[in-house]
Length: 237
Image 1 (cartoon, helix red, strand yellow):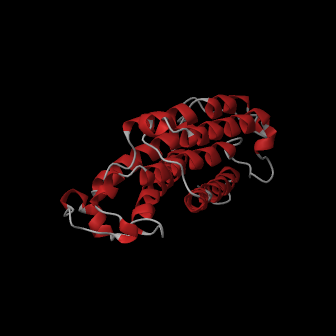
Image 2: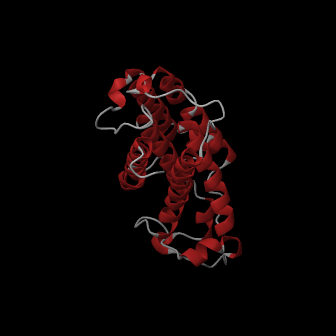
Image 3: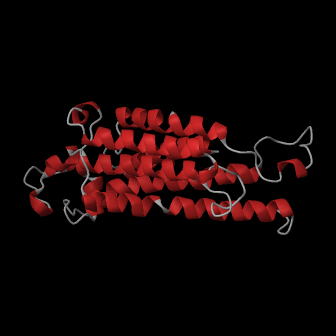
């Protein structure tokens, strides 16, 4: 679930940026970096998850039962859609709402290809802001942070994070810390600005990244709650 929903999020991000007519939100190198970070340590550590509580009390799957049913697919799509929308929102926030950014309108952002050279945005930004690495770095950091939160909430498919949290898999905690440390190191390494097209984020930008990333935990908790009701048959789903 973790890998599929994360990959759906990346696809949603790319397509949404194209549909909205935005500049390149994530560069190909940034997408490669995301896959290296999220598909490496965290995905491997999830293989050490403890057995799902009560798994032996459930009857075996029917021979003709689908591996991915409609509800599971819906979970993938809901989580993946939020990942993609939040990533694009990070880019738009830096361009349109960040107090230290250009504070342009959304229409100006969409018309980035036709920006007159004489245009002056807030904080002394000109049309060259469309080549700035910082909005893409915010979007990249939102994507990485959301996927790290998503990994921490993937210890179990149905149990709440409160009853069975990531501490049940110490390898996962180490993997997430290691992956996030790698990402922070890349943002802090001057040479990475050229290799990965990133910039070091300010405290304000990190605050936004965490604020927009945390709701993925709430969304997954709601999905788990619905799954528990579905499995119990109380909602007839």
